[in-house]
Amino acid sequence: MSKITVAKYLQLRLEELGLDTVFGVAGNYSAPFLNTIIEDPKAKIKIIGNTNEINAGHCVDAYARLKGIGAVGVTYGVGAFSVLNPVAGSYVEHNPVLVINGAPTNAEQSKNLGEGLMASHMTGDMYSNINVFRNVTVAAEQVTGGGEAPYKIDAVLNAMVSYGRPVYLEVFEDVWRSECDAPDRPITRKHSDQCVSIAKSAAVAAADLIEAKDKPIFWAGVEIQRKGLQKKFLQLVEDTGIEFTTSIMGKSIVSEDHPLFKGVFNGNASPGDVYERFTKAGSKIGIGAWTTGKNLGGFNIWDDNTVLSNHSGIRVGAKFYANMSLGAFVDALREELMKRKEKFKKFSMDAAISNGLKKSIQVQTSDELTYDQFFTKMNSFITASNTVVVDAGFPLLGAQGLHRGKPNTFIAQANWLSIGYSVPAAIGVKCADPNQRVLVFVGDGAFQETCQAVSTQHHLKHNTVVFVLDNKIYGIEQMLVNPNPFRGKDKIDYPQEDLNKVYPYNDLNNWKYAKLTDAFGGIGLEVKTENDLDIALQQIDKYPNDNFIVHVHIPKTDIPNSIKYRTKKAGEDETLNPDWSLC
Image 1 (cartoon, rainbow, N blue to C red):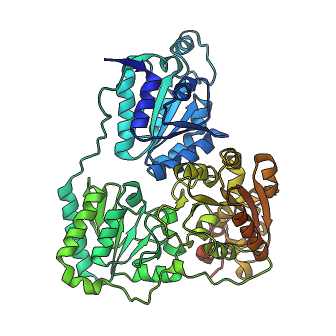
Image 2 (image 1 turned 180 degrees about the vertical axis):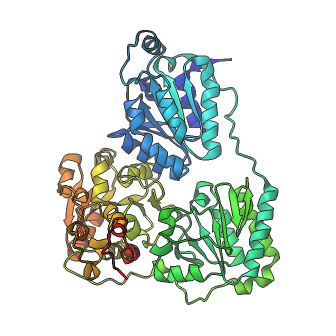
């Protein structure tokens, strides 16, 4: 059997899986792997450096959403622990990412154990890195010698493909150049064989519920995209004629131009007509939709008329079916419903219910630019050639009404909600789909976390546009604990003055965001009014190959209409105050 280096083995296996990009921050412990790639003139993988490991992690997460897998390379300790937060996000949101961590050599590990001499970035525990990542991966391996490398590498890659979630591979620095057996057969891509008979039983129960109730609706979620089931889902919809909504995490998994699409259902944060359509449905059939706080906006979806199929299980009312393939369930449900096709006439809701995304939000104009004014304007600006990447907080809630006719063009970390995700994620999106121009909507607090990613965008000659929505505070954090400052004319005048204004720890330093392009590269613009925004959008169209930072001023206590429901009830701090009296 022929021999190759461990670094070459990993390169070949990643290329076999179709990977074409490794993101990360170089370090000496992982340099032999990176050098193996750049020394190979036939390498199918390119290496893209990032300004820090957090940015690299968010970048690869977005890339993996669109390409199917991703890889990020870091160095021991300081690099690995920095990328932990983004990897946790990939774990929670089911994105297949490989973490490649270079570690100190065997000799350095021995000196640490025997003499207490710690090399760079060591904690003193040779398992400190891998033990941390075991909590946010589905497989983690430490490679200490060439002989064990092939089966350990194959094991983590197989787990990544099978479960669609992150894995971790740690390789000692001196092992990268060690010899191991070359691959002698294709990598095994084993997928879990979940019980088809259970899926069929669940489908019969779901069809019985649909038949017994009037006006069903599908609630499509992110698992449809993660598991590549878009075509199957659309076939189910079109053959049955049942209308559908998506969750905010599942937004744009299929085209929102579809005639049976009725909007994004986000619980209490939904548009009024979408909320009415969903709540009046006789049965609600969740397919791959997750019940998270951001998906539901405080809405309780559980009742006897609900079906939820996700996380390898399905709940039909009070019944639960475990170990189920979502794809098998979609197939079985379609087959079962087609047997009952004569009863489909009662499945359709009143045609007067409209798709809430296809009409502009009616907002009052003012000298200052509000969230709703901004996103209404953006809805008429964005096209199918744009992919939208949205950060957590008010931007996500404001952007949920943006119409997306092209599938997979709305990216948001809507479950893990690490602020700052969007700006580096835009790099991953652009690398995965170079023909798209990425538009980023990010709050000022989130932008301050990861703004260096704009430097990478410029370095890579991306034409990304970053809209920084600057309200000068951590708005969503204030809203969660005390929404009183956002109530406008309904604001309560508390004797305790702190409850009447934004808490000082939520105030942000006021940056001149448009000036950052002087350092990072690109074009900076500043927007204060709707007319300013019109001019800025003209400039963006005029320079289609340039990257932009657009500084958008938003009033400090303005909020998107979709979250105003939160001002109607007490915040966490208000419930502790005896003067709380809001009706």
